[in-house]
Image (tube, rainbow, N blue to C red; front, side, top):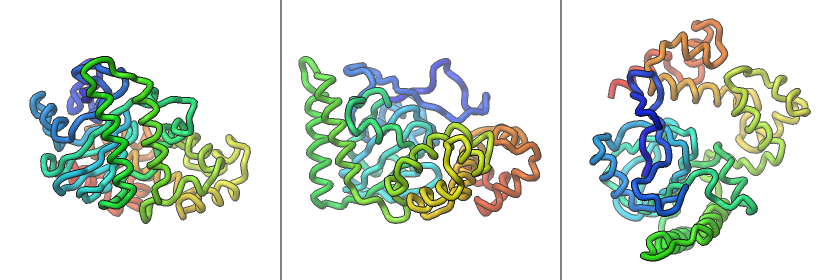
Length: 300
C-alpha cells in the first residue's frame, strides 16, 4: 500500500501534488506488494483519504481488472475499465480512480529498484512514457497475465518464507509479457524510434523545464534535428518539436490542476519568463486558458 510522502506535507497548504511513496503497512518484501484493488480502496478510506483524490506516485502500479466496470484517469486521459483492462501507472505520473469501488482486480505495486536489473525488464521499468492502458478482453493474452499474477500472489501470500528472488523473476516475466502486447491504438510505439528516441526521451525528461528548442537536445545528444524528428515521428507520429511541447504542456496541466501555485510561478518553473507567453502556449496545446483548466479540475 502507498502512503503520503515522508514529513506529512499538506498538498493544499504547500502547493504540491499529493505524492505517494511506497510504504506498505506490512513489509513482507521490500519494494513489492500485491493486493486486491478493493483492499487498496478500503485502506485509503480507513486512513481518511478519499479514494478518488488525484495523486502522483513514486513507484509503479500494474492493475488487471477482473470484475465490474468503471474508469481510471492517468495524466488526464480517462480510460474505461472492465474485465481484461490492464493499467500501468509509472513513477511521476498523476492518476485518479474516477469511480472507486465499481471495479476489482489484482493490484501490483513495486519500486523501480525491485525488478532484476540483469534482465530486459530493466529497460521497461525506466520507460516512463510507455502506454498506460490495454484492453485485453478475455483472450489468451489476458489468460497468460492472469496466470502469472496468480503465481505472484501465491508466492507473496506464502505463510512461511517468501522468496524475493522468485517474485523478482516472476515480475520480470510479467513485464516482458506486457512488452509483447500490441501497442494500444493512438499510443504510438516507442520501440519504433530505436535508441535515438530512447536517449532523446531520457534527455527530455531531464531538460524540459529549461529548454524547448529541438536544436538544444540535438546538440546534447550528438544528433541532428532531422535525426530526432525521424525517431519521434516513427515512435509517436509527431515531429520532435511537438513531443517537446507536449511534455511541457503535460507538466503544466499537472501543476495547474493539483497545486495552488500562481500561474506566474508555474510559468517560471517551466522556463517561461513571461506569464503571457506561457498562457498562449498552454491555450494552444490544451484548448483552454490556464485559469479555465485549473478551475475545471480543482472545482470538482
